[in-house]
Length: 214
Image (cartoon, rainbow, N blue to C red; front, side, top):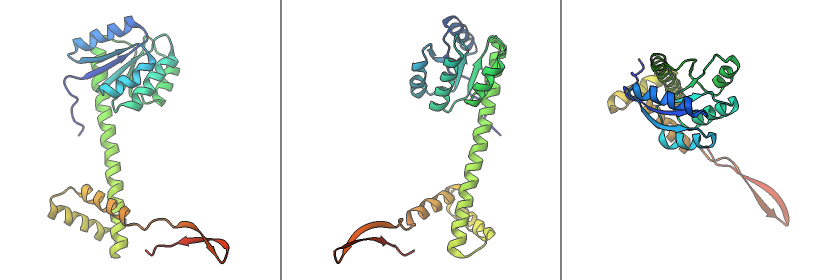
């Protein structure tokens, strides 16, 4: 189950329009959250996001849709936090472009109740996404480790998985940690790629391939 969102969030607000920015900041503060940054300039959003690491970002569609989309792109690139875009009126074209850049939700009104609900929803969605992404990553590592053990010991995948599980139980370490250690050590033990060098034999230059036995 996804973890519950924190009660007090650190929120970044970005909007070209100062009046809209201040209105949203007032609503966010009224919800008990902390506004860590209020940005009007597109060029500053990336740096501020990188330095402040917000829990959630609220990006308003101001006078330029291109600038709003650039803000979204910078925030998504710099911080692992969900982005909500705030619209004064429904704009399907903008929402489509914003979604391609990583927006998790949008709302067309910024009253307190709706904004609070949007924040709760987007945080749960984001937590679910990361939980799912992490599960896929753990599964991939375990499959890699099983393949290494199968090749090394000439066993099938069930026996390889049993080896992982037994070692996990005896060592008290998580199964995925055991799998990661096997994959990492296997990569270190792989022979280097053949290196081509130039050699001169009897006045003739030839290519010599240095082979390292497996």
